[in-house]
Every structure is written in C-alpha cells, then in structure tokens.
Image (cartoon, rainbow, N blue to C red; front, side):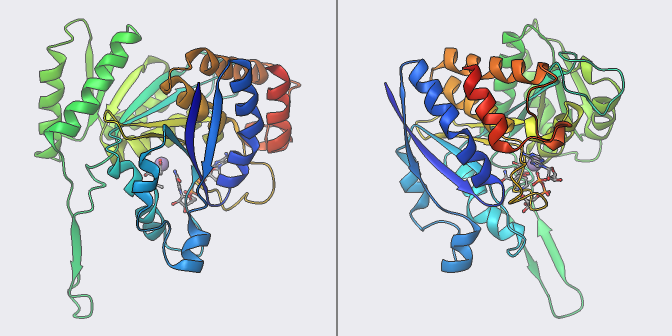
Length: 350
Ligand code: NAD
Ligand code: IPM
Ligand code: MN
C-alpha cells in the first residue's frame, strides 16, 4: 500500500519539525508494510515575499488529489498574520470542508504540568472544534477609513450543516470513549448563534441518550480547564473558542510543543494534519523546536489513513520516551536536546 501525502512545511519552525520527523515516518512505514510518497509544496511566506502570494491560484486544486496533507506552520514576522493565514491555512481548511478539528490534550507520564499536583495520565481530553466558519467566516468589511468615523464589521456564520457535523463528531467520540461531553458556548451573550448551537446539541444529544452533556460558558470553561482539567473528556466548541481552549489545553498538558491536531473532512477531499502550534519566530533557527506535536499529528494522519497499528506505535514510543527521565527532550519540556536528537532517539525506539 502506498499513500500519497502533500507536505506543506510552511514558515518558521514548520520546516524544522517537518524535516525532522521524516526519517521516523519512513521507518514507521517500512516497519508496518506501507509506503509514504511525498509531494512537497514550498508554499508560505517566503513565496509571498518573492511572488506576492502564499500559494498558486490553483493551489487547492493541486492538493485535492492527495490522500492527506501534512502541514508545518504558517506565519512570518514580515508579513501580516491575516494575510498569511488567509492565503494558505484557512483556505485549505475551508476549501476542503475540513469541519472537524480534533485536538487531543494528554498529560504524559514524565511531563510536568504547570498546574500543581497532576501526574501522567490525569489530564486526558479532546477538543472538537468547528473548523470552517463561526467566528472565522470571512464575512465583513471596513468603511470610512479616512473620515474619522471608521467602522469594522466581522460577522460570525453558523450553518446547521457544519454545526451538526462537529456536534455529531463530538458525540461519537464521547460514545467511543464511554464518557461525557462538555458543550462550550457563550449563549448568555450571543443569543442567536450560540443559542442555535445549544439547540443543535440538544437535538443530536437525543440520538445519544447514554451520554451526559455538561454545558459551560466559555469564560467559566477556561477557568475550569485550569481548576479541574481531570474532569474533562470530550469538549465541543466553535472555531474561535476551540482555538483558544486548545492552546490552554496544550499548556496544562505540558507544552504547545506536544499538541497535535487533525482537520477532518467528511467528503472525498484530503484531510489535513498539523501541530497546534504556530511558526514560533522566537525559537526559529535554533534547532530546539519540539518535534513531538508533529510526530503525534503524523500519528493522527496514519490513523486516518487506516494504519492504526503504526499510529498506535508512534503514540507508544512518544509515551515511552517522555516517561524516561534521561531520554532527550527539548527545552520547552525541561530538557536541553535538539529537535533532531529527540527524533533520532524515537527512531531507535522503533
Ligand atoms: P506559536 O505557537 O508560534 O508560539 C507560542 C509560544 O510557544 C512561543 O513561545 C513558541 O516558542 C512556543 N512554541 C510553539 N511551538 C513550539 C514547539 N514546537 N517547541 C517549542 N516551543 C514551541 O504562537 P504565536 O507566537 O502566537 O504565533 C507565531 C506565528 O505563528 C504567528 O504568525 C501566528 O499567526 C502563527 N500561527 C500559526 C499557526 C499555524 O500555522 N497552525 C498556529 C498558531 C499561530
Ligand atoms: C491554530 C491557529 C490558527 C487558528 C491561526 C493561525 C489562524 O491558531 O491552528 O490553532 O486560529 O485556527
Ligand atoms: Mn491556535
């Protein structure tokens, strides 16, 4: 079996972590009897600075035929973030209807949470984030810029189709994990979109009578993810809330450098896998970016392709490495190893 993967390494530490995990992915494939064929797309801010666009006009069409996409990170200090992200990452998520963003937060054994008193395994939840609309809808505009009464409008968009998709995916995950679901909104203030969202949760919840649903407002949920993270299992939230809560989830589980992400489409188009973190301009070029978020994103990719044994193996060697106090680890999780040293050690564990 051979899989055809589009690789967009992007900006900043994106190329560092994507390059680093390559030998690990190749060896995993070999061990488990499949092949990974890569097509590298060097799209991103360097291309923007040279050619005026993050990707070619037919970029989405070129990605469409691949089995999956692996992405590093997007964002460059010399280009405004709304330009880079609206030029590459967001059009892919939207263009392929990657409505289901799945982001696990796991406190591994051997990792210290900044929260006192938690040990490995005690924090383990997954956020289901709507990924194509909501607060990220590209609907709005600016007017009267030079007239002293400037205005900006940014409209949120919530469709029944996308809301049902993400809510159903979250209920399915809660059913698989034999657990409960936490629905996170801001229905007290946003009386249209979020009350609609809550109604969809109630409707779909009727199909899952065994699953208990907890409802939290996003402000209280942010507090509770710090106060009692161990009680969360599956969370569902809109695009922006899910974005904020997953950086929080990453840090309570030890580091943004450990947090993977899957952007799943239900259609025939490719799904995309990427670390939760960005291009980290503060550490770029130093060789110390934690590659584990990308390793685990690759594990989510392999699972999505049906290679669940290979995927489980990647999770297992990451767990094993982190549990060993003397194994190499990057500075974000308290070590002094380089990106490459961490991956070389993982390769030897295969
Ligand atoms: P960031 O995630 O890039 O960095 C936040 C902090 O976490 C920094 O201190 C960084 O050094 C650290 N960090 C991130 N990844 C790490 C890793 N693998 N190992 C060790 N430390 C790591 O977020 P930011 O600073 O807000 O954004 C930087 C740029 O990235 C911006 O242009 C932003 O728009 C973009 N961004 C892109 C994505 C994406 O491509 N998916 C996600 C988030 C931010
Ligand atoms: C993420 C990032 C992106 C998002 C940005 C870079 C647009 O923060 O993947 O978490 O908000 O989705
Ligand atoms: Mn984010």
